[in-house]
Length: 368
Image (cartoon, rainbow, N blue to C red):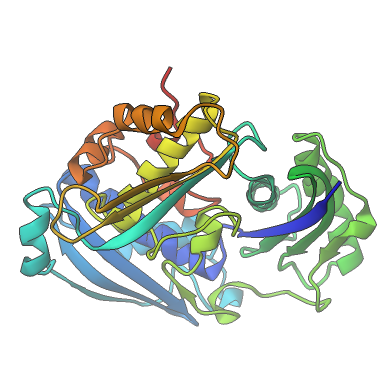
């Protein structure tokens, strides 16, 4: 019997990079709500008492960027002056029109950029996602809920999670280590934070998947002190958590991030299509573990690469898998957008706790 360990991390919704992802996707949603044909590529930067938006927008929507930013910061809990950052911080907007040289290709249903994307699925969890990243996401969401619902009222915005899973013969068998980082009020001792995170967050989350851990296996705030999180502690940027957004390092990732990009950008739509294909292959019992690769050229409608890797776990012939893939989804840019209804999707919910494994997203829904 062979054994190994694998670790994945996630971050809470108030993490600086995730603040940026959520602001960028909130801008995208506001544009698509008015004009489904909007072209959006907006990046956000946050630092001490500053928010900066930069990028390109072509849309019939009249966007109030400052209002969008403030709404997100209020929702995320950044309303206290102690954070030195929040809904009171100035917003600098540096947004211009999409390049006409890019638009000419996209207007003809071509890809908005070149690049490669990968989608992955396995049978480790009901969502066909790897267990380490699923647990990391669930822990991050549970920490946020404990703060928002005042279950642990002393917690503050920001936070990170990390889970190490033990595998035997390629299958998960137990939890080796959990690492949590969460800012909290100064008048609360770390020992209390650790014990209550374990009882209110860790144990309930693991039990949902049939696992458990001991308090001794959990590390909370490794330096022993963390009181103020957010951009005062760490500058944030859109798209800096692409491993968190994807498969937690368990599978390959493509060349680009997702948030703030409309679906003509294949960094986003291509990655969703690849996941959609991979998930269906596993869900239909054609293989136990699958990676789908796609690559595009700017202005070209069809992918220049389409691959399926089953790691020797296939249950049918490669030919049958290829036929299944071809019937499942037209992987042209237009085909992906229409089949997955990407102009109707709200993207803000994707910007925390991962883009995959959540059935409210169209690319996660299975066909019969």
